Amino acid sequence: MQKGITLLLVLLLIGLGAIQTEAQIASASDNLVAQPIPDRLVPFDITDPGTSKTVQFGADLAWASQQNFRRALIFMGADQVDVARVSYQPTYALIDGDLQQPQIDALGWRLWLLQTFADPNTKVVMNVDAPTIDSDYYVGNADKWAALVKATATRLQNEGYEVVSVGTMNEPDYSVEQGTIDDFYNIVEAMRNDPFFDDIRISGGNVLNCDQASPWYNYLTPAGLNEGNTHQLAGSFDSYAGFYQTVTGNGDWASNDELHNVMEALVGYEYGMQMGIWWGPADLARGEMVKAFDGDRIGYAEHRPNWTAAAVYRTPEG
Image (spheres, rainbow, N blue to C red):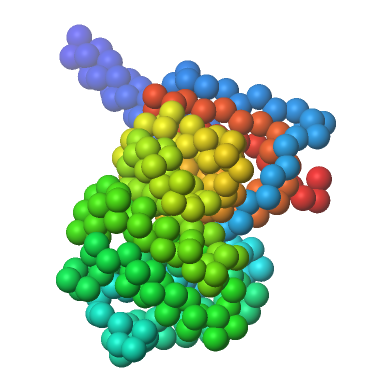
């Protein structure tokens, strides 16, 4: 009987070893993961002629980072960088209608990056960079603010760059120290009354929250605004998409000069955005998307409650 029990235990141990050995053999099914049912599908047909639109893309120098700027040029391709965003600073009062040395130095650094690394045909979009503001000089004084923009733009033009757009304030719905919406209105009006700005777009309201984009744009348009621009750091999908439809419906230029992700660009493309500038670096995903936009869009889907979108593009080569 004892021999029988011993034999049974030996067989049992051998069997367990065999089971453990079998369990250590890898299988392709080990890596399979159950996928959730998608909320949206992106149907497409490779024979569909698709939709083709022109969108200008740019790299940012408001955040004057050499690393960010060079990465954008590398991943997008220098020939794909249509514009660069270069800032003016209301940090010091003008002297004899010109910038003071700290403002000249800040602009000079941005110019050096532009001249050293970008295509010489890159155009300039201006916005305000206000680490501090000489509020006694600028806030509530539209003529002086307009003169600051003009003095900065003149220096850029003297270096051979075409200034195509200027933003009067940056995220004024959040950074209220720049002034009120009426101050914004008065600055736009002052610039529009100066022939210097005849061939330069004036953008607004350049807001942080896209729910505020249409209200600010609609309020400022009578002053001479001809470019609607928004960011998307708060607000609804409906407001973001609807804003571009409102702006293009008025025949104005539609922009987002601080794209924070690919999804904002996909939605912008769908609803009328004509210019997008990447905030920070533009790495592989952003660069590849810019190149994809050269092709035809043959599929698009969105999920507004989840703030997501996806698209399919045919390469320019077919």
